[in-house]
Image (tube, rainbow, N blue to C red; front, side, top):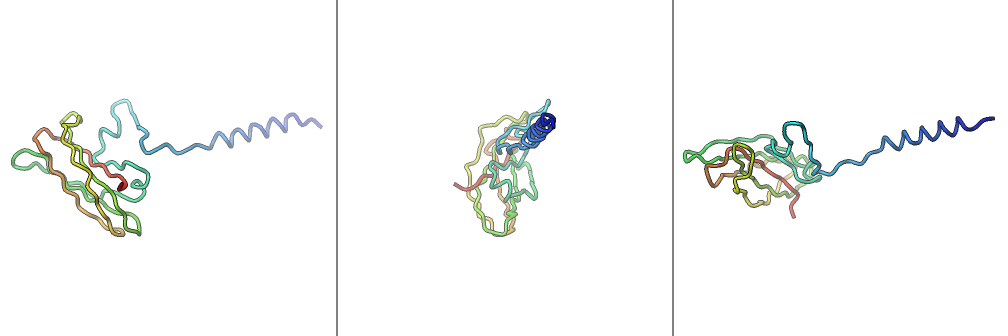
Amino acid sequence: MNTKPFILLAAVAGLALLGGCATEPGPYAAQDTTKYTVENTEKFVLLDKPTQTSVTCTGLQEALLPDGRLDVVANVKNRESRRIEVQVNCVFKDEQGFSTGDETPFQTLILAEYSTEAVHFTAMNTLAKKYTIRVRQAR
């Protein structure tokens, strides 16, 4: 009996099975397109894996104050059945999406089980037209 075709078939099947295995990319993997990157267009960004599974944003409110500064409120929701502690900050950007140098410090936010908390940010100058709210696991 000729076992050569059987060995060849087994090798190809083994390679096909191993070739289908892939590791999950890290949370910082850029998702580039031909026009822009997700990091430059998203208003709410989760910076690490634990927050990607535990936190979501249920709403963003933005308004211009009478003096022309941008005011932002984010509703941050805990999706877990346990209390979690995260840190939240806001980077204010100009019309083209570049940082204006106005970045709030990270503030600690303690979220009870399945609760939603409103986090408030106000730009320090009138250059801010866009923003990115960033959430990470508390350190």
